[in-house]
Image (cartoon, rainbow, N blue to C red; front, side):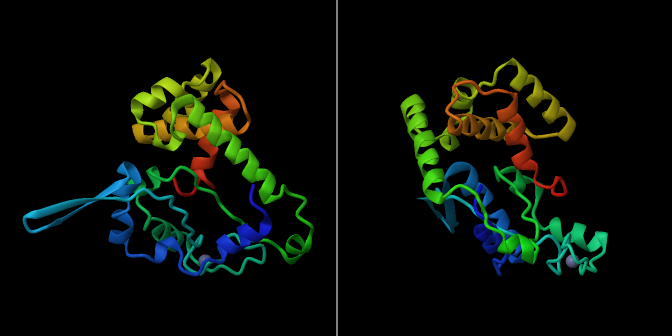
Length: 214
Ligand SMILES: [Zn+2]
């Protein structure tokens, strides 16, 4: 997990995702899915590579203080709902990890973090990347449906959990493949070949965020 400094920085990003025009956000769907973007002008059509990693932040409500410990948010549930709806379901479907970053109290900010250093996390990420290259010559994120079928198959318990989650949460086929890729990555980070129920559970949880976006 990133340190508190990073979490606070993410929370404080001024230009949050929901401030962009909805059409601009929706235009991200094509490159997020395919890794390229097509531009059509009159009779001409050009395709450009557009493979990128999207990291975005948004406030929890119009005033930004929803869930703050001192209860200063006065937004109505309807205002919060409308604000969050500016991110469409299909766009959210293409975002693998959705996490809530709660506000920190002064005491929490001043406490020593005791978390892992970035160097340690970097080493683990590099190791997971090497595992993926050795196994399939590409990162998990780039696997197509056939690749997911071949390399991201969970064990019986993981499969049962995933089926239950899909049914209960009404997840799409796209979400299904993305969850399996994230579960594969979590298993790689732990250095295990097997994709088990805990890996699937973490992948499903990481996708749902606080549960208010789904
Ligand atoms: Zn508010």
